[in-house]
Length: 119
Image (cartoon, one colour):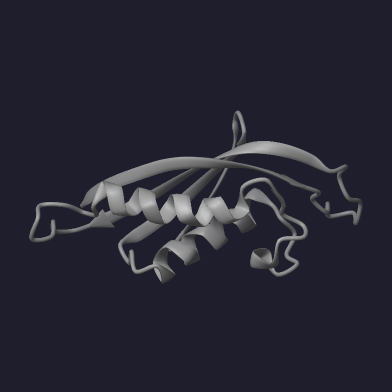
């Protein structure tokens, strides 16, 4: 299996609801996002995915989240804006953009705090 990844980031704030119903104070992060693509065989150009195209798609998606309040962002549809929810959102958007070899999106919310979504 061949694997490549591209990484980018965005800055945004959120307030996460905890299991006990409490809500954290609003705070911001510099989110780091890594999108991983896999293929069993390389394409006709000898690639899993074109790095430039993958980065362009990822940057466009993250640009919509940059400098926003994720609690208010329509993209998340009112979901609790956890790193896990953001990872799922980015994964789905990358796939919807036609990069169907996406396999995993990893979000680093803060140093040492990483969430991912994969299928």
